[in-house]
Amino acid sequence: MPRRIVECVPNFSEGRDRLKIKQITDAVEAVPGVSLLDVDPGAATHRTVVTFTGEPDAVAEAAFRAVARAAQVVDMRTHHGEHPRIGASDVVPFVPVEGATMQDCVELARRTGERIGRELGIPVYLYEEAATSPARRNLADIRRGEYEGLARKLADPGWKPDFGPAEFNARSGATVVGAREFLIAYNVTLNSRDKAHATEIAFELREKGRVARTGNIRPRYDRGTMLFYREGALPCGECDFTAPAYDALRDHARSTHGTDLDALLRANDLEPPDVLGQKAYRPGRFKACKAVGWFVGEYGRAQISVNLTNWRVTPPHSVLDEARRLAAERGLMVTGSEIVGLVPFQALREAGRHYLRLQGKSTGVPAADVLQTAVFSMGLNDVQPFDTKKKVLGLPSIPDKALVRMNVADFTDEVSRHTPAPGGGSIAALCGALGAALSSMVANLAHGRQGSEPRDAELLSIAERAQEVKDRLVEAIDADTDAFNAYMEARRLPQDTPERKAAREAKMQEGLRQAVSVPLSTAELSFEALQLAGRAARAGNPASITDAAVGAQVAFAGVRGGIWNVLVNLKDITDPAYNADMRNRCADLLARARAALDDAAGYSDAKLAEMLSA
Image (cartoon, rainbow, N blue to C red; front, side, top):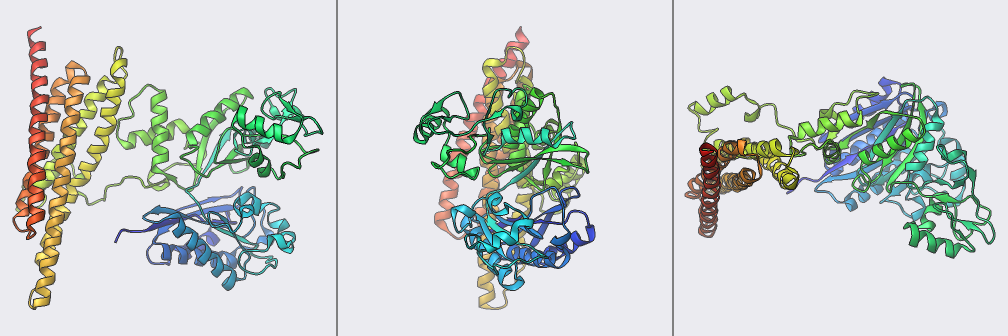
């Protein structure tokens, strides 16, 4: 059964007392099956972001225990910090990661919220995808008034909590529990101590925008004169247009600027069309982006604190680039940026690729190089050390004891010993990986050179895909050995009774099918590496033609070796239909690989002959 992995990222209103923080995280780690990934305290914000993952039920249990412990060790009556908050366990979001759906997380949020309210006596509000009404979907709306205004909020029937008592819990406040997409907490640091500088830029970036102004708005927009919606004269916050009535203004905003004016005004606590006498608003630059400005005493600098609620809509590097532009307009500089908690591997990889493209460099390089470019370009080490191994969720990693961790000499020695694994399957995967690596190298050597412009798109395509194929084949080096070991373990099972013998046979058949699937994947990926080598030979520089040719040759060895390992394992599989299908697939793949090798080798030989005769 596929794994279901959920992430939980609770925020606790304690960022200074390490002992209290540890008591909370100890409660998380005490739950079997939960992995504590990150603990990120902030002294100025007086807040700690904790990140852990696991199976849904285990994560829900860990979340409840953490909230319970925070209720014991955090006293909101003495809490003061820079970050908005409503309780000791301020917010507890569940995020689908792998094999789990958003609905799974909604159910977890509601179950956990109900338990917090019932067992701990803490008022609980549900937000985002778990919200019980549109008015409670936005976390900022629930937090409005913060802890200091919570007693008044609870007295309002319209703000009755979803779970727990509608009574003010002075020690713990309230807790907001929900389900959401992955949120990137991202801070941009300025060369200023003035919170107003950060706020000015935050208002330009965030989706809900700001009060519209006119007149002296350059370079500081907040110095202009505020616009108001007047009878017969409703100004557009984005241009000089003035409408006689709200409907006309709404139509203008949609048709001219693509702005949903109703949604914009509701985000700013107005209820259209009843807006006369109210301030006019204009939207910010980015969707799915929340931002405020603050001063962080710990760093001695102002920061733009950004929450990206959907990084695929608005990635952090886009916000950073715009913040840099807006800062420069105002005589400020962005000194760097900070990721609070974790960041998805894909998001940081896209940032690295973005900056490599700006530099005119190839993005088809190893993942570690791409991430390093992102870290340098975004200034992620500016105020705190940024460790990719700890901060990047889903980072491709290789176990410490993996074969590919060995140096070449040790790996070669290991292959030569009197053990059946690593054997031909692992070597076939290695050959395919080297073929893909050479293809990427040839493409990268040619990309971005003078006169390469007509071929750069093709070269980039080769390099990027070759990196992906290479990484998967590197994984297959160990996967082939693991598959063989699974079959050998099945052979060692007892067979002293008819039932145990049948169970042993079933496990052996299962192990054999696994031992077939891995080398088949190796063969198919090596074939793709072979095709990439052929493309690299034609698109790359003539001086690299032999590198592409060698890449094609070793990739073909990966194809041939993978197929041989498929066929040798078929002899003991008892399913005739499965065997026939595998043999047909292997025959077809081998024929195509031979044709591709002949084409690549023939082209390379011809080019080499031209060079020698010149």
